[in-house]
Image 1 (cartoon, one colour):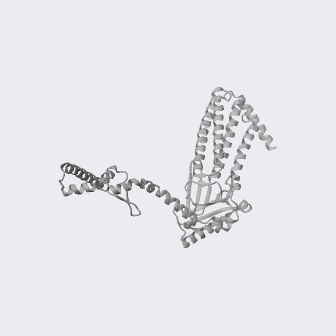
Image 2 (spheres, helix red, strand yellow):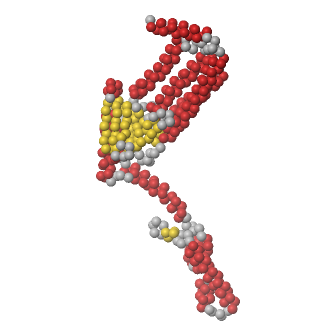
Image 3 (cartoon, helix red, strand yellow):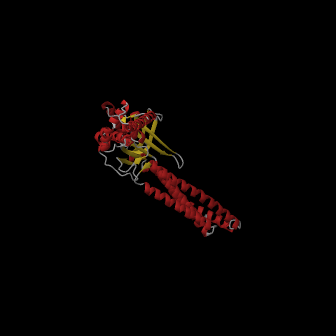
Length: 90
Length: 310
């Protein structure tokens, strides 16, 4: 009951917002894109730091999983690069 | 040569040519002796650790200078094999001492199974993603001493990560809730996809960072010391160690419902060092860990009494 009420209210609000020309204007969409790209670049720095942290920890404590964890870090960085590239071209 | 030398020194003048020759040779000999003295003065003989004088092999001048004074010894020396340079054996001496020291240390150090009842019951384990790794087979750390045995590696029990797992599920659920509400409906589909990708990248990143924090936040117990590797966040980590013989008190406690069910608790190690307290939070089998540390402390005492301390 409550969920259906929330759904109906939000749907109505979003339908009204969709008709707002400001929200569909190129300036607004460009602003969203710019924000997403900036966030993506910040995330890229985070992914690089994460990889560096893995390298440092692997030097401090050497385990058999060091290679696997490093690979996971590289994959994570690769994903971040792909997402940032998509955000740039979308 | 000595006859000629003697004749020359006695001033025999039976034959002028012979005397001239002897004079010339005497002059040569005096010059070489003087040269040898100068060389010896500038390069005093070095004494080795065993009390022997180090032969000077590098100075050709000295060898040439001393050769005419004693022909017999020079010929004898020439017939013998060349002297091995002493400097090589001196330069290798520290390595030899180090290896000998390691050998002695290895002989004096007992294996953990010889004195620990707790570890005798445990099988060696490869340190993959376990939270309790007794006698790890494939782990070393940067400041490890050559004969130092890693006895136990502890990480927080996976159940302590329940909060983070719930946060990740909350983030996933939150995204689908917003989609269900139609929150992104006013955006073009490419933007919707971009936001979705970025949102799930953040979820993956958070999960990965949490996993790394759990993986590297470890407690290493060796037969010599206890090391606490704390990873607070991405940029802050701390490595604290305490020698076993500095430990004064060890306590363990289980806490909460999940702690009692999964045998998870806290181990507090009080030391006499600069870092008075090491705290292992959320580790499995805290009572067993305390027993092990007590056994290690006892062994340290035994080493001191038996003179096995290196």
